[in-house]
Image (cartoon, rainbow over all chains, first blue to last red; front, side, top):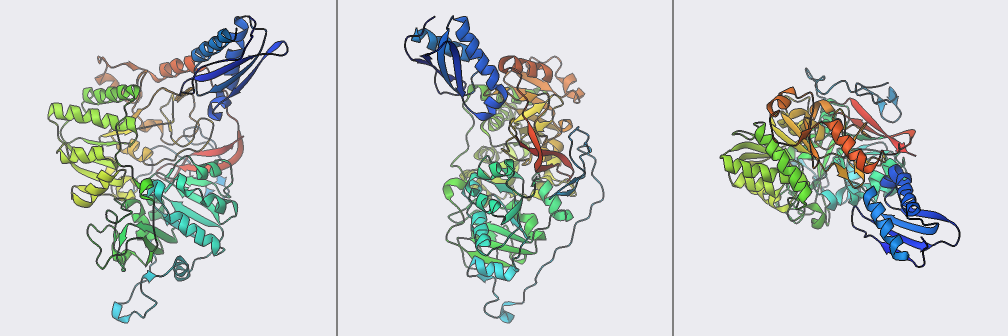
Length: 89
Length: 520
């Protein structure tokens, strides 16, 4: 799947995550995750992996993904990532 | 060394001293001695030259007259909560005087005490001990190792025990006094900074070398009733412009949560209490002031009304909810250690059945019997609970200090049933863990965990398990709760800590139940 524009999904509410995707300028997916340190210290790597895998499963080959977390669970992260990618397509 | 809960620390902690390890919640009772107090007696007024009256003109004069010097311990209480000016005012003057190496022995530290971080950095303050601390600049300074000596967290009963036994000597106690006369009679329920009961400072007024009443409402002798601290306990009276910001002292009213998950948890807890036979005539109840804990009180109240039950007493920090239950005749008395809202301040000043209790009367395990010993039901919060029901209320799961024991381990030990109510997931964190970050209350004193995903009863409470075996309540076990939570959140990565001990957590009997190390 090719991204042609910047797109965002999600809210800043507790338990949600704002995912913004941009077309990448080189092959590969880079994920920049920000949020509360208490969450990121314990789950940051797992959450980044969820975003990465969701994008790969949708066939994205090149993207810059920025995420602002407010303690979302994996199913929310997957849904917001997918939605942002579909909107950017 | 390791204590019985498997927590490891050195036998001697620099800046704290020799460690007595925790050996069990009920292992320290028996004959106990208290220390003597030193006091300066006062001549009759006719024999007192001008300049020797109790009334001081400035904090500098107070420091002169108490012989303020490096290394002293100053006692403070936190009934002005997040509006307190007294601690900052005294420490600012101490810093300006060039005092060093002071120990701030406050019953509570709040966000409003941020200015003292500067004095921690400059070595004016090298030690802090407290029973409560809210997340904020001082908690952060302790977590990040700025304080020279480890902070000491004692419960509300543990602090008076430490003072009475001589473990902690208070050199000068500063009593925030909403109304005071020139001879040191203090009333807490009148005046522009009225905050209700002043009871956490009582051990200081009995055992400190000097007691200073700091007031912004000096009235003619004698101060109006109810007088809480009487003149024979007070050396000096200092008048300042303001002792606190009313907006930070008490909230207008405390409210029951409206969060449907919180209400569901509270409803389950009340149903469990009813089924287990705790809602009956003569019952007693204490809850935290958090929205979910208060909601349990609300549901218990409904069941009391429905069943025509009259309870003996409500205890602890008092809210408008308990005041209402007292007025309705659902409770015969209140034992109050701090007023959380304006209704309770008013009630404490007017209603003789709304009684103040000192920290020692509240929870001191080495007294002749604290009120927690008479408590049936205790509703508690928790940051984390482990598979043995040990509770953490001190640190977040990343090791950051965000609270202190308060009355948690006093009440859980004293009450007949101690129930922790909490959402299983807090944000992305599952509150049931293999191992809590810091133990505050031992699992042997925690009976039930009620969450939105089910109720776990401590296997030590065989009687409860038996009584509720046919119940329709969503009973499960704690391991299942943990697995359910971790399925949603994933397994947390381990947080790494340095070897530096930034805080020592004492159990209420003065043994060390855990330490807090500085996170990497």
